[in-house]
Every structure is written in structure tokens, then in C-alpha cells.
Length: 164
Image 1: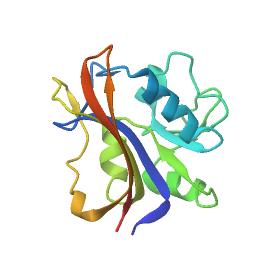
Image 2: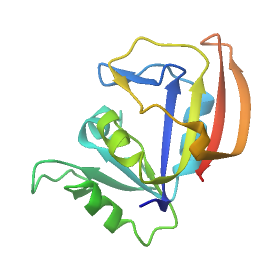
Image 3: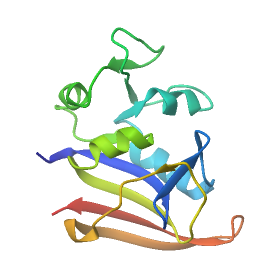
């Protein structure tokens, strides 16, 4: 089943790499601004390693939902859930909820997410965590912005997609 109100937001390399050593592969200031603008005021769903990787803890002005595989585990400033199904259930009345990582969480939500907010770096990165390979035939492109980051010296695209 596809959930139209479940969206994945992710920055990936062209080889679908998303992270190494529990950190992002690259830092694009404009992408961080885009992430904040898109997710502010909405629920964000993440695994606990993603929560621990956030420099200031739970994201402000968002409903932070953390998925844990340890029943009863709680995280300050966050709601805890213990399965993908429970996460879907607690956001069923949200206009939109954003899945923000990490790799295992993305893999489990990818088959059921109705939207995908993608930042794609147009180069490969060495990584230990990857996003599922995207079959672009399953998605309709809603918008695309092709950009260049001078600091990192590579092209990237912001692509908003909706599952067909």
C-alpha cells in the first residue's frame, strides 16, 4: 500500500550513497535550507542513529518521531514508536510526514512512500550507507532545479517526485 502523506526527503549521490560513519557525505548549505523549509511545521520520522547524529537533538518546529527496535525506549523531546506500521499509524492524520533517515528506515519506507524529495549530487561518493535504487519510471517529476555548489565543486539537482 502506498501512503500519499508519507514523503521521503534525502540527499544522495548518483551511486545512491547517503552516508559514511553515521554522517552525511556532503554539506550543501542551500540543501540544508531547503530541508528546513520543506519539513518545518510537519512530522519527521527517523531512526535513533539519525536522531543521535543531529547536532542539536530533536529538530525544532517539527514533530520528531523516532523508531526504535527496543520496546519502551524513549528519547527526550521525541515520540517513540517501535515499528514502521506504528509510525504510519501515528502520522495518519498529518497532511504530510517526512522520513529523514537513516538507511534502514529509508529502505523500509521506500516501497510505501507517496512522495520523494531528492537532492542528488551528480557524482559518486564512497559510503557505507546507501539509499534503495530508485526506479524513476515509478515516479512522476513534479519539479526539478539543477544547481552548482562552488564550495563542494559539483553539480546537484533538487527533484520533487510523486509515486505514479
